[in-house]
Image 1 (cartoon, rainbow, N blue to C red):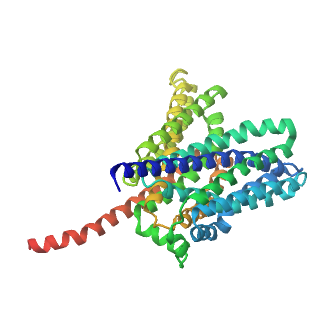
Image 2 (cartoon, rainbow, N blue to C red; image 1 turned 45 degrees about the horizontal axis):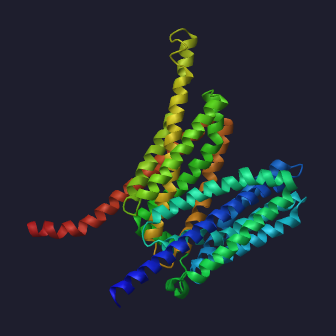
Image 3 (tube, rainbow, N blue to C red; image 1 turned 90 degrees about the vertical axis):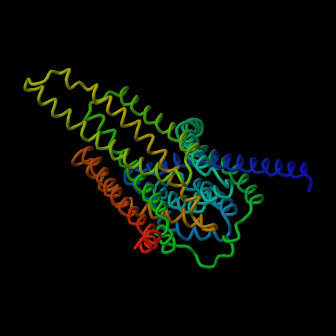
Length: 444
């Protein structure tokens, strides 16, 4: 083959790869718009009865139950048929569940069952998306994962907060369901194209021994960085959901911030998340990501402890002012605003860097043909392990206040950091001992 033909083939392959990547990201964006719409539908269906609080709680539990019930079997299916085909199958199943929602209008008791069905079929679709990152990007998994997360937040938010209210105002829940179904017609078409054009890894088809709980745990034991990534994904899930409950109460009751000040703090958190996504997408690889994850864990713990200590400091300062030791200006809530803003900025950075770095490690270190099982099992483990801490944090926020809840999460983070660092040091010694021992013997 002459040089010009080789260059032409390279350009054709590059162009083909770019088309497939754009199609993949278009599928992600469309699916997140449809998911945002459908989640709004589930909220309305689940809260439509007189016992709306019970119905909503059941719906939220059902949305988290799919990965626990069928996460591991779904991961096995993904690797057996290949991630491109599994993405198509998952898109079709999501479309069917959305269409079936039309039959539940006016029957709020069916809302949790519908949510559970959607969660279960999503265990085929979502891990397939993550597994395809390795297929589509021979390198640069960090950029792909950052793009997926940006599309998740942006497109799902647009579907839930912008499109859903508009469709509900025009045509009610039926039009919202029709809108979600229409977006998934597009997703089914794009995922079908990807299933047709993308190769299926041989190991995903021929592997006979399914990598389930035991094998996935074995992989995490062998790969310390992967274990660190899975642990940090779990901690990030616990921290994010706990802070979503605790921070509004903390800002209102402990710091006394006005709605405008809370908006500024939230805006800084969003800015931190945007900066974190941009940086991690450009900088993180499987080599750099472990260092970034350690820094993320330390900064997250420090930010929560700063918020806990700030409230205690302000309360003590207020008491000293009451007895005349300090003036009002000394303990002005400006201090609370500044510390809360800095903590929000840091937490925003951490909550965006953590998933990008962790998933980059898993994408680049998991054995070929096992990506679906790795991501599905990790998701199931995360959901199982977050139940007790989230319940404890929610109960503590309601009884002992938000500071107690944040302190609990910070303590969990400290214990996790200590355990992972001890394990890392031990693994480093195990690697070095076989190398150093012959040299020591020779010196003797």
